[in-house]
Length: 67
Picture (cartoon, helix red, strand yellow):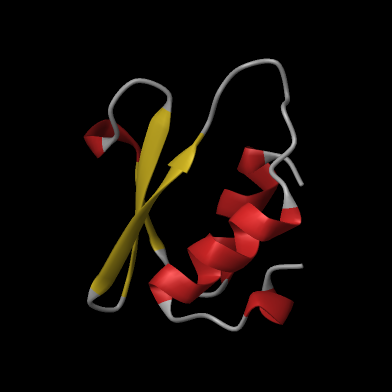
C-alpha cells in the first residue's frame, strides 16, 4: 500500500493527519490520545504489511481495518 493511500484510510477512520509536524519525509498521525509517524517518501514506495500492522497497533486500530 502506498503511504498516501494509508493516510486516506486513516483519515476515514477519524485520525488527524498533521503534515507540518513530521521531520523530513514523515507525517504525524494522531488517533485519540495516541500518535505515530508515517514515512511519505517520494517515488511511490510501497509500505509493507508488517509496518502497517505495527502502525495500527501503535494507534490502537484493528489492522484489518487498514488492509
